[in-house]
Image 1 (cartoon, rainbow, N blue to C red):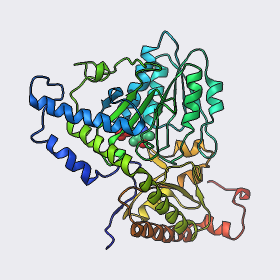
Image 2: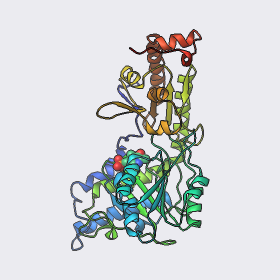
Image 3: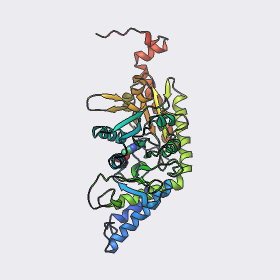
Length: 406
Ligand SMILES: *Cc1c(COP(=O)(O)O)cnc(C)c1O
């Protein structure tokens, strides 16, 4: 098959809608357009049936009860609802929340808001592979702690956290446990009971479903989790999230979840193969390339590399026909190195030289080979222009050089 450019390799940011998902959604834009809350006619029942099937499909992927799914506009909203909803509802019990420094901004910025509202938040560090240590969670729990929130898999480095261990110790201590599972959901197995999860956030557009639809799974018993709704209105979703349901989106989310469930193992094997081929193709040809994150406990589609002596942004510019992400976040004024890589102890320079390859369902061997070839060419070209790289090659210890700044 001929290689088609540009190539999409940014599947942690979003994924294309699987054609099988789109096909399932289409009738709900046209003749099945009803409002799932309309109880008096067949249009409403028809829409509700589609939503109920989606609840089952999504719940099945995490061994939850379909009645425990609360549909939202995406994982950002799910994270907000979980954290703010618990903080407000359990205010009499306590005001302390534990999370990690490498959470998605949807969790971190919500925690910042909760601090403004008077909560106390502990941000746990991670080790140099990006792992949260359960014993540190245990140490941080006090009699004021109401919630622990640790993500299942990280969106930058793909590191998979010891969620089952953290969940077990939360339950021993009677503390609720939320996980932002947006990156792990549909890609690695999840069992909310075996893992003692109380609240779980997920999103359709990271698993080949449509954008703008997600869910929060909320445990109904053992313990029953209560949430203060953050959206007031018609009392949809058992009162936890008012607003007319996005029926086509939810139907697509359900179909996407079903496909992930059926194809997860095979897909993970394939993506691991592609990812290792990409890694070999690059690291076999270039020196001073470093893997960020855990070598084994990571998402199969994730490869995060730092290329010493090369600016990640320049590398991306040189790799224009491959869609990738760099470890620098463009804020309005400056290029900030990724806070996730910083938390791992990756130096500023290497953080700025990092690239995230996010492989997904529709990537091919040809695309991987093209991406690795182009990466090697571009890094070589940029390093040829780098005086620092030349000095280093000549054996000069760059740390010993006295830099003069005029
Ligand atoms: C993408 C992502 C989110 C945000 O999800 P949306 O559905 O886009 O709001 C939250 N957490 C993680 C880990 C993500 O990867």
